[in-house]
Image 1 (cartoon, one colour):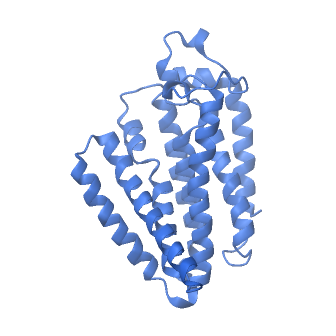
Image 2 (cartoon, helix red, strand yellow):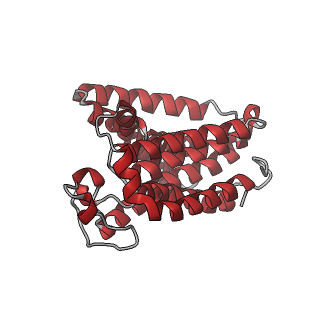
Image 3 (spheres, one colour):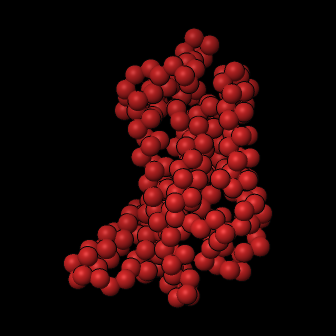
Length: 273
C-alpha cells in the first residue's frame, strides 16, 4: 500500500472512532438543509464516479483488440453501452437536483459520450496498455462504489438526521443495524455521495498513461483530499448523513481502490509516495 493511502486510511479510521462518539452532536450543531454549500455538492458531489466510469468505458472501448469475431464485437457493444450508461448518469445526477428539463439530459449525454470517447482516443498508442489497466480499475471502482453502498444502505436501515423529529430519541449509532429497508429516508449508513465522490482517487492513476503528470502526484492527491472532504462535510450539513456515514462511505471506496490498484497497476508506474 502506498504511503498516501496508508495515511488516509489511518486518519479515516481514527476519525471514524471519534465520530462514533460524537455523531449526533456534530449533526445537531451544523445541520442546515438550506445551505448553498450543501446543495452545490448534493448536485455535483457524485460526478467523479460517473465521469470515471464513462471515461473508463470509453478507454476500454478504444483499447479492445481484435480477437475472435464474437468476442470482439461483444466487447465493443458492452463497453459502448457502459459509456452511454455512465454518460447518462453524469447528466441525470445534475439534472435531477437542479430540476432541469429532459432535453438537457439527452443533449448533455450525447456531449459526454463524444467527449469521453475523444479523450480516450487521444491517448498515444504506446500508452494504451497502462490506459487499459487504469480503465479496468476505474470501471470496477465505479460499479463497486454504487453496488456495495446500496446493499449496505438497505441492510442497515439507519434513519437520516433530516427526517428526525426528536433526534435524541430517534438517533441510532451506526453499529446497531435496524432492519432491511427500501425507504430512502432510512438509508443513511453508509453515504453514497461520500463513496462516489471518493472515486476521484482514480485520478492519481492518470500519470500511468499521461507522462506529463508524472511529477504531479502531490497536486493530484491534494485535489482528491479537498474534493472528498468538501463532499463529506456537505452531506452532514444537509442532514442527509451522519459523520460516521460519510467516513464509512469514503473508507469503502478507498479500500476497493487500493485492492484494485495493487492488482492492476505496477508499483513503479505512479511512484511510491
